[in-house]
Image (cartoon, rainbow, N blue to C red; front, top):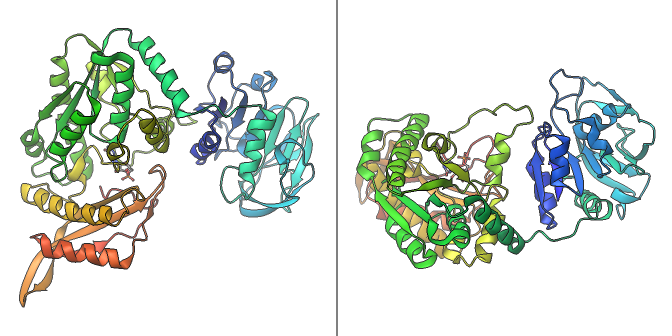
Length: 509
Ligand code: XMP
């Protein structure tokens, strides 16, 4: 495995993805990890990420210097390189201005990292400080016009530094450089497959749970279904799943999910319907964060009451994925600002005094899908687009009423039918409708109408951290709009959301 130390870079996930794409396992950890812990992990290589700080700042993130004496190859990227050079006695010059953007990189030494890389290649710079003097044993291996020491090596100790970012696609041969580090320098093998992951994970679950009972909240989405299947393979009937119908699901969803789960998972599932309780709790509430908190709170009560009926349960399983975990380990130990309070993360375990089992916490969404395939989950479940815990409540802007819910259900059903029929469902990260709380004037059959507006949202994404609006063909958009207005009572106008994330988010609330 490769250990990635998180110095707060916005590109950390990208580094992890790049390593995993090569079928090598990697893990991101905070700089506060102890040397003993690193030794226990026994990585073949260590990558120190970039970060927004200057090594001269009082609270800039640091890792124990002993990491450079472990005999494990280290690659420092941007801030990671500056930290390494500073810690080993070199000189880093403070800059008041950042160098940001493309630069031509001139390679001076084609050994190791730059093996097979062109003499002149494009790289992506994003740094303030730069290195002006190298410690003993280091030499410069590449330069740019502005940055004399753009890459460095101490071959004897296996220490490498890159001032630019090899993980972003703007560095044209960055993938090759990372591959050189992983395979040539560190000697990793391509052994990280979902088959090996499933085997290890099943053993680990058996060892942790040891004959005790596990409860898992299941939604019918790919994450909780894969988690259920994996845990079931490990502990069989000691797993009980709970499905809560909160009345905020899409058209016929509760029924369909029930059918699919029963048919394919063969796992004990308790179905609880609490629709009125959620709707009552939401009555008169328009504020998005309030809605989320209310739904999260009621969910917790319903889930807890059901879980209490399962005697002797010691563990709570969750389908938490790696992006959530990465977001919660900030290099500075502090939480990043709360954009939206996702209702399935946090809260539950502490109050219920159950120990957590999170078998997917080191996986990205596309890996979860591969794992699902490996475990024999049907395509119907594997390729379900993500659906948020608070459901349609965050897709009805303003107050939630039965009438609005039923309008949105119909709109969404038409939209999904067209998306599926035209083979876009699998290609899109998500496609859904949002009901707006404003009305507009229209004309239908010579009569004036004054009805709701529905927005269509379709995005492409790898992991929902960033997303782009989908460039759906105009003909398809026209058909969707036409069908919605003609078939759904209460909507006379359809608009298409053309905002990317950031600065917008995927969901509207
Ligand atoms: P945003 O709107 O933050 O959404 O760009 C990113 C991804 O997360 C989903 N989402 C949620 N999923 N509980 C969930 O399980 C939630 O509370 C929640 N809120 C947003 C959203 O659908 C998108 O895939």
